[in-house]
Image (cartoon, rainbow, N blue to C red):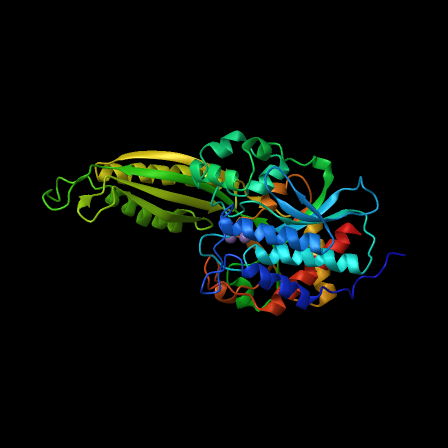
Length: 414
Ligand code: HGY
Ligand code: MN
Ligand code: MN
């Protein structure tokens, strides 16, 4: 008769204590965190995570991609692994919940399973994936673990090759190590992740849990609008080939294009870098960090052509040259029915309200979705804030999420 774990719960105070210790690493004055992947602050967080894993009596595991994890083995050493996790890296000046909550909840699940001496048929692993946020490559650790990482992904990454190589060196990793970090396909029993929603839907619907149906795809480019440096005072307005005009008109028109023709997609210009960059020089070059997202693959090709055509038109309009550099992509992915059912049953056990939600954010699960059953749940973000120190989730919602993760893991691992 299978044991009944329906009354089992995580230890909220123990999880809160670990969460707060972690949040103090790379903390920013306004209660956010600044832990870009493989930065000093991220490596400090990983050092803390490893020490906490070992002090908690778990096996510590790391791989060529720098992924850090705690392992709770089961009796059968040849059994596959159910990974629970997320990421400890953050966007620059980000929030303390994005990624961190998922890793702390995963570790708390391992602690709860072990202290209740629950015998599982699979190994359990609590994971911190490298560079989920793409300040270097994007979904780097999970892509490496899944065997999807290629040398070309490391050649011209969206965070810049120099910064990637600096991070690799600082972390004591190597490109060859990253490229050989793949797990055997049949070694994974599944992947479950708890994450903050980073949007307003749960809060507006007054629901406790979002069960993720699909994760959006993301393509990245660097667009360079190139004109001519000139004296800002003596060059007539008609004579200027001002790179800023192409970059800014493209940005405005790209938004209109997506609103008009691609209502299920989004486009973002997260950074513009001016060169030479002085008050009294007409901008010679503006590099634009372009990212666009869509829930379906077919739409990407149309969106891609429409945006590049627009960039060419705007460059021409202002007499500029245009250079485009493709910086990588992640395909959209569907979440597994097995995982979604396990999460739904867990919500019923815990009497938590739920809705199905698609994810407009990228997540590590999309690296693993073709290898094993992958599932995600969201908990409410206050005012939908994320990727900002304003990011906040009520602790009871964090505890609810961790309990749903526990109950779903027991279903998949049982
Ligand atoms: O950017 C994203 O979608 C995620 O937060 N990495
Ligand atoms: Mn995240
Ligand atoms: Mn994020």
